[in-house]
View 1 (cartoon, rainbow, N blue to C red):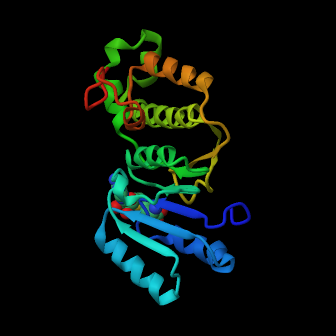
View 2: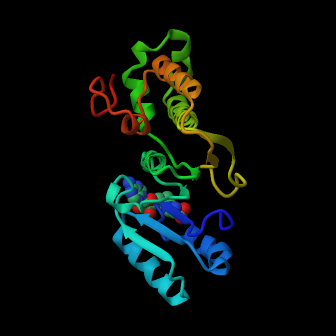
View 3: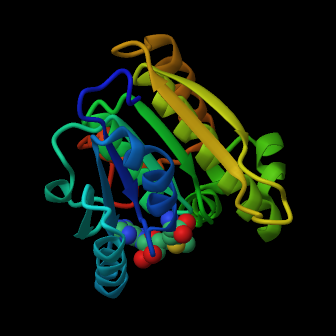
Length: 227
Ligand SMILES: C[S@@+](CC[C@H](N)C(=O)[O-])C[C@H]1O[C@@H](n2cnc3c(N)ncnc32)[C@H](O)[C@@H]1O
């Protein structure tokens, strides 16, 4: 990234105490002497604390913004890399939607717990084919399947917007149960073939997570994603 871009811009969405940002700055930004690292966080006390720590350390190319990830004003114009580590529930969708809109060159997200799609599966189970319904008949399975389905959809959305996607393990299970790392590198403008696969999955499962609603707002969908 530092070789490719004159002024690389990294955004950490849902940055919390900005621990990830501090590590990235120490390892890469400091010696590169260029680029900016933006930390977007909804809780002002976390932003303030991280900002004063950055001042103490002299990390002057770390920028701190107190805002919700879905606030378009919060984002820099150009994004080279989006990172989002355990951004809660649909905040990962907000981060991916913003990255796609800003044509981010790379994305790296480790999603957190996800509840939205499990609720949609429960509400719409009568519409789903009976054999498929068995995958989420029990609440525990619904939560796990909902979370898995959400991440599969996230990966397909990225692919359909021209990203080459890799899904892999983030760290050892002893460190985190939220352990799925979704990596994307923008290589095309779009992929119609991936969009067709995404649409087929959405119509089979009858869900519409926030990422899909944000990128395809349509009159046929209500606020909660019902088609
Ligand atoms: C589980 S913490 C992870 C923090 C940090 N990324 C880390 O790994 O240490 C999730 C953070 O995302 C923030 N967050 C959740 N939803 C958000 C949203 N919609 N916009 C901005 N920040 C959000 C929370 O306030 C919290 O600090």
